[in-house]
Image (cartoon, rainbow, N blue to C red):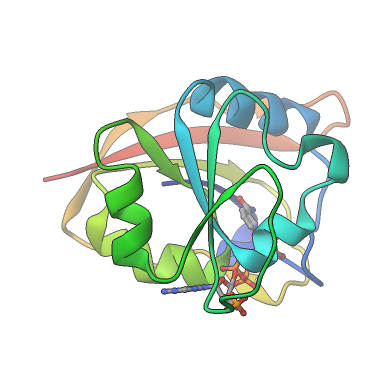
Length: 157
Ligand SMILES: NC(=O)c1ccc[n+]([C@@H]2O[C@H](COP(=O)([O-])OP(=O)(O)OC[C@H]3O[C@@H](n4cnc5c(N)ncnc54)[C@H](OP(=O)(O)O)[C@@H]3O)[C@@H](O)[C@H]2O)c1
């Protein structure tokens, strides 16, 4: 799974990101390039049209609506179906909050950008339990807009 969180695990507000961090979008792009990405219907709808589907990646969208249309993506009616679609390749769960909560039990790697900001939010990253151990802690960096961030990696024990 891959996500970015501000203080108190905030990841979203009004179906959007509560910050602008070009460096993190680039990190997301390079980390997931060439792999499959699995996301919830709301996260899919939050993507700007020019990157929907996310280019250069197999896009899988979770929805319980059998009539939903997501041009350029494959649909999955439940998590099991989504994971079966990408079983033979590297795949990233990329949100949003509902999908992170449901999928963390299936994840073996978490790549988390910590953003040093206090922001209002309505969507939160899952708690990372003791089944994961920290494997890499990146140095704090300063983005071009002055925001501090660092990247942590957790692996399943
Ligand atoms: N900071 C970050 O790294 C990051 C990353 C991603 C997203 N976000 C933020 O997260 C927010 C969106 O998250 P969210 O929790 O509101 O929504 P979400 O997880 O993106 O999507 C929820 C929808 O996905 C479908 N879904 C979820 N679980 C399913 C299942 N097991 N089977 C079938 N369909 C399933 C349902 O669609 P239907 O209603 O169509 O059935 C559900 O309404 C936005 O604010 C976004 O910006 C932040």
